[in-house]
Length: 608
Image (cartoon, rainbow, N blue to C red):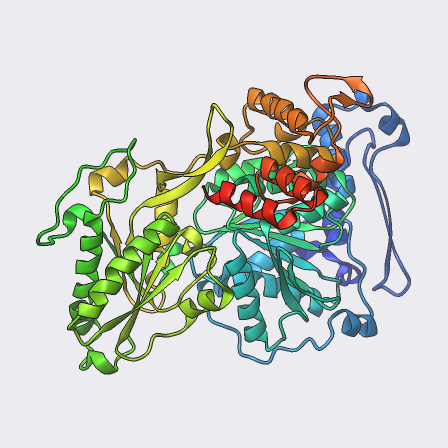
């Protein structure tokens, strides 16, 4: 049966029911295991539904079902349950002051709007791949909101971002586009800062905020749509969130739609992970790719060995020895000085002093490296005899919100904005006037010491995926240039993707979160991850948590080495985004009346 075969009486039926009507005949097995009984009310808009997918006998005797049939039966019984259509009065109450005051923004993704909306309506999980700055982060949630509003359906969209600055700035951007107030229909929640209200229908949050919500409620039913953005950043929280979402999606009764988005990620791996079971096999997860070739401006990429810089000394790079060579600072200085001539030639500036110059984004691995280069360039800026001055701006996780907001402000005429950033600017944040990107091709990752199990940020070469993300920051409003400070041959040796954090970092918080889920042992839960951690690492983590008081030595009063009931202290450890030992230190400080001192000691330990 095709979409065109749907009768006029079914047009007003919500998509969830229509999809069942279309698929009903193909899902019904020969022995009648699947029995669809869909009843429409007399009004036509209000729908009553009775779905009995598996006979009571087979529910009580699951051995009579093969594994695929059983899995698909459970999945079908919990997905595609339709949302009730609201009355006009209820719609106005659910969407108070829902107006669009500003003209829609023009983005590359706009041509895919209808395709994306239909995919989200018909499928439980949708994957969207689009180049940096194509508009997916700001536009897709708004399209979902508009679609539900026009169809008079309830809507509660939550969008995750890997960093606080991204969640805040994007929420403000969407509010500005729609002419809304932040905290009303659109808002954000990062850490303890909550700019939402009862009227909020679209909220941007950090990954950890959504993860805690789902672990606490053990249900997706609070949200109609969950959008996981920048899923290529495979930190521990994102991998565990993917695990929780997948498990709850197939085991709780709700209508939540899942949308995965990123600019550069392994689509096939995510599609395989979220395959949907049906009686005839696993259904492919739909993937929508925004054509990268549609970008209007070209981005040219240059490597260290292609730069003819007088006085610069070539240094041999080694995979096992990632370093920030001070000689590279001289290369950066030379590039900044050369941009004036490039702009005059390419952008035809007659007077640099009065021009609005394009900005520069420099990617460095950490805060110390940013401060070092900042001081070096600041000193050079005072000696700069050119008519162009540099407006140097650091961008990392510890600066204030006001300082972060400066990166979005256009530099004064005759000044060039130079942003020195960690990988915080790698994704989600789009500074529109970036023409030049200088990439050290380095990053700092969380790594655990094999002897002590303590974690620390260590210098590593960035992956090709990271470098591609960074290059995507240029070329939004004019042709861009990317300078990678590694040789062409060395770049080819970089890994395609970074190792998932779940495979190289301590698992204490994840084990505690899995215990709070109460859906199996930590080994059983973490085995469901996209890249499961080593079993011996999980067992070692359980022993560590027992030693520091996060887990009991028993499960239901029975002594066991491989598991343990979570303690009150363990629940606190699971909720604090720091090392579990620091969590215990803070907790003991609170108990013994030296709370502030304990926090200071914990902070020293974190940044040591």
